[in-house]
Length: 167
Image 1 (cartoon, rainbow, N blue to C red):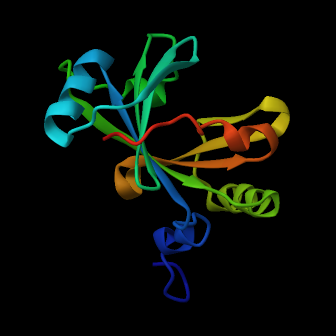
Image 2 (tube, rainbow, N blue to C red; image 1 turned 90 degrees about the horizontal axis):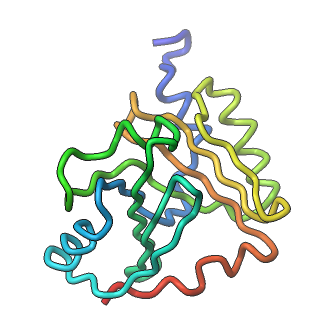
């Protein structure tokens, strides 16, 4: 415990908001096998499939307001993804929890808070002329996963309009 009875983990919690839950981020070795697993286990029949990067192919589906993301990676992907890839085709493994940040002001506050927390951010990207921002925070020692925060504005607000409900 630190002076005043506050330990580092409690301190970090101030900087990482849990409101705005958006998606479960899974990784897999084989997307076709993962789709079969999701179909037989959870009844998923609809999804969108695309490449988000040359090293990452993903499927997205919704259940209510929650999105499910399952990604397959090539060996060129950042290590933070590759470390989670399961051994067997068809297996999916939770790699991150995704949260939406609702305003640029809150995004900037989040960036400041993450920096103050001392947690590492292995991936921090800005795309679509700044309309899409994403940052992954390494919280593995706290919850075993990464936490992803996303901010959409402008044209990025429609980026996932074509993601279907999975049933």
